[in-house]
Length: 255
Length: 343
Image (cartoon, rainbow over the protein chains, first blue to last red):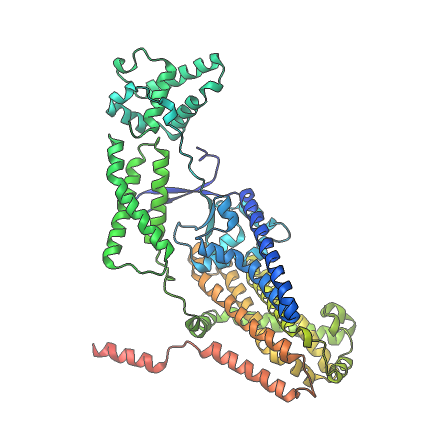
């Protein structure tokens, strides 16, 4: 997990439960904006074709349509999409970002409008320099528009289901014979420790033979110290098999 | 502590699925109102999911399950703890005749401040031009205004065809969008503690003041009023309204004498800011039409008296509307008082 590396905003509910939101950094946001800019360009191009057709009928009206449509697309793109898609534009959707209320509440229309209108200032003097600096300085990675609208932009990465079935295949796991100890192991193991066991098992064939033996020896000792299982459960299994069993207990809910 | 995680999940999953379905329905149709029993059920499901999340936290290895429950609780939390209004259906009529003028009246200090800054700019521009006529090029960065006012008046009054006939619609669109951009800028610059808004207001005031004095000194006051009033009577107040919004934003940024947090101050004004800027845009659409279709025609095509009269009428109507529309009628207030006493 990269929780330490990415800034997060933890919200504690009155019910005493906490959930954390991963804040998006300026680079990801800049990329999303790039995608949005390309979309605005594409819409404008399409509109250009419509203007050409209209121009054959009435040049004045076609000109008026072009000016108004470009203005509405450039200003309204962010507002309409973020409101309709609950905080997402095409670029944000692609990069799995979402605008949210700073307190985790429902996003209001006024918030969407304000953060989009303040782009005028955030984009000054060029390439979102003001907004980018704001993102870097602010604790919650907010540009000026976010600050005024009380919004944040969060990353919502797709959680990849680890392919835990390949850990064990159809092999028998002796640790599962002791459900209370398995439960204790789950409780005492941190997210990072569980991830280490899983990654070690999944990448075991990439390791040098000596390093592989060493690594699994250390890991097995670490997990054994956490929750000692009875002799009968661990008798005759290698260190690597022990770590496999641990990863299986930690990640696989069903038998 | 959960011993049998599989059993726990299979028992709780129906409740999570139900909560997720309810949330999906609410997100698809945000204006739908729940019945009391639906609301109670939703609250129960939220509390149950919260409790499950608290229990699963001891199982730190169950990353995916925890992330799923966290997202579920986060979504439901937003709906349960949201107490700001905004879920009622939007009515354009109600917004224009009630919400907009009410928002304007709530921030009168900001409006008067904007008007004063604009007027000071106007006086400065006028004084600067009368003292130093050579400064015209700096004070008025518009090529068509740099020449002699009397010559322009003579030329425009003689010209039956203004060259606008073929492009009135596109000219009015240009005016609308350009002025709306300036207004948005005046609002957005409020975030610079109001400095940017003041600069926009003052510089626009300087330009208008310089143009006005230039034409007045040349003895072309009637032309000036006939030319500017029809659209200016709406356009200038619109810019003032956008600047009013900018100053309100600046006020929240500074927070003089307010014992509420930075975030709460912004939360309180966000609705009014949006109302004022959309109101400004509506006024500018009207002003754009008038400027393209009426303001550019002078005597003998349209008499100046008619244009000046039209502009004055617009100004009176606009401020009557902003000052009076959406006020609670006195009789209504008295009726409700009587009703209260009756009980």
